Image (cartoon, helix red, strand yellow):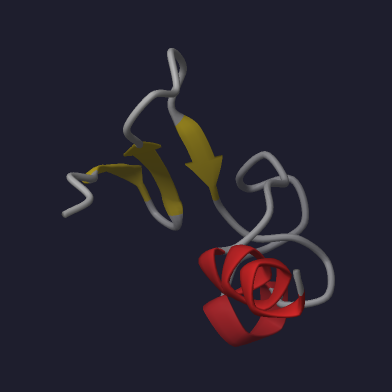
Length: 60
């Protein structure tokens, strides 16, 4: 079983604490999905979305 902890910081920014990783993974938004999430350019730092990670995992 995988134990993952997600901490929501603000808006779309979240930290994922994953097994074996010493540092959390940061999730957020970027230009390609910003409108869907309703965020403005510069409102939050750009980070890959959770969907980006799911697509990468499925493609790998």
